[in-house]
Image 1 (cartoon, rainbow, N blue to C red):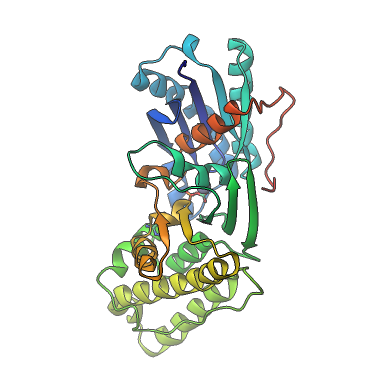
Image 2: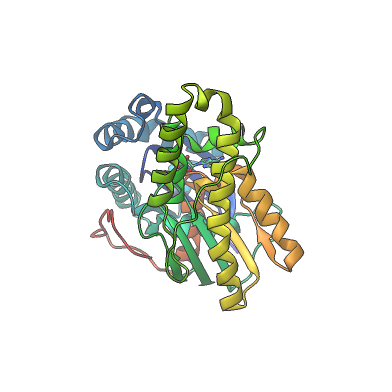
Length: 336
Ligand code: KG4
Ligand code: ZN
């Protein structure tokens, strides 16, 4: 059988990414991170689309170069259709459509969160989950528990009603004076802190859904109260505060995840999305193997936004001949 070469593009938020896959193997995976947003404490959509515009050609050229592939060898172009920022998605979408049209090869439109989940099927020498399995997708924009029946049948069992868990990390970090995105810094600082030093509430949400907006407010009020008593409270307790924040967020995530495992009887559990890079979450998931879970954690480079995950999701679509028409559009609010 012949090998399939897919060029994939991801531009839904603030990373411009391109990857080349040979079947389920990643030949190159290039990500240009937009540093410009750090000084604003969050992603500025207009600046993001401009940066995508100037990054996309160099990133695609670099991916082709690293993979040692010529454009003429490509079998299909995959891209992120949504969800994400409209201006950002448009850059990747238009680029992918033009490239597919000019090479006269199929176009594959991919849901960003399918990418985060199907990233588990990238050939990295590790054991793969089998269907059905549960996926906890945690990122700056999403917090969902998904039942994955097949590569094309993904059912959302629970979702956040307000903020995503990544926002809870980032917004708490902002209050602490940490730079954006604060998630990785909280992770690092938490490693030398006491997770039980401070108590934060677990917000209520029905069924398998999540809520995080009350958490962020609780952190804000707690810190305002303590800082009034002691001006340097944050500075003196930064590691303990971070460890306690992370501990509570893990508690919130796993309470519903455990409920989902019990309700569905599915004990294979995978995590994906930027926040799954968190070392505390990874450890906690691993520890659930003692309860009979089989757990799957993607390699670090496939957890935060990347195009390899879009490539593997596109590969599944390619095998099904599930091609997109040239009338496909960027869809900022697309559902699973
Ligand atoms: O998937 P992603 O790269 O982009 C979105 O689709 O949102 O996720 C970005 C999020 C940010 O909120 C960032 O703070 C968080 O992932 N993040 C982490 C860690 N690494 C990235 N949060 C906690 N611990 C980490 N180690
Ligand atoms: Zn993402």
